[in-house]
Image (tube, rainbow, N blue to C red; front, side, top):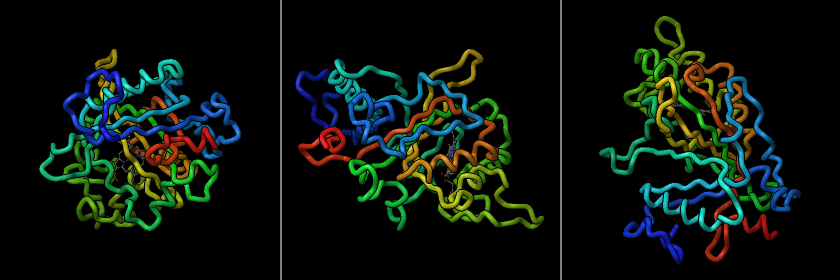
Length: 308
Ligand code: HEM
């Protein structure tokens, strides 16, 4: 975003620059009927299947329109939210809203992969824009269906609470075994540094797998899922404490892919049954959105869908 305030503005972000403000719009399945464009409903927006470990709150799941607002400054993000809410007051009402955060830019001496609330370095083995197959995996191709989604992507949004009291009781060694990476620097237990490729077949001197059979990185890896991959861009959240005193905190897991059936769905099916980490997680809300490509100056996001 350019960081310019609309007329009659609230003034919340006065004095701030754009602060890397990004506003991303996605359409849920139910949008298409309401907007009179049922014939444009993408096949890829089929409802996500149920997973055994789901504990979903339907009121905080799905929705017609998803708006993700990100900024380096919380005031700027809130300002954008208020401006959009005012604009949409006669058209839309709020279904759910979640606040997430990541490490503030500049908090570490050098740019680093962020940590999640379990303390793990999270995001290392994501597809990279420089990978040959990045575009194919993450974005709907030019000749993809429906045409208005060409260059767009599908976002899976899951609110995943972490059972932090149980997690924090595990020894460091157990925590690392559950994930398959070292906590201090994110290096795989098969050796090397954070960015060393994971060697799933490596065995130690006793013949045991260096990365355990049910370790999160093994079960989630493309190699274990016929190449299924997604771009994970999550946020942490903390919404106070539950009645039992446990933190209501975890990961707003957001995964981007060209087709959820070749990204999130097969991987979550596998994690659902055989991931050591899932004992420490509760999936509490879920949604899937079709995110159209960005727009040129003078156009608006989703114009190709709404105006043909
Ligand atoms: C709160 C929940 C979760 C936590 C704390 C978590 C944490 C992590 C960590 C620490 C890593 C290793 C570093 C990295 O490569 O980023 C990782 C890797 C990964 N996670 Fe998760 N994860 C969670 C949920 C999920 C879910 C729901 C999925 C997909 C359905 C997923 C898919 C992946 C994938 C694909 C990798 C990379 C595996 C590889 O190729 O090495 N994760 N996760």
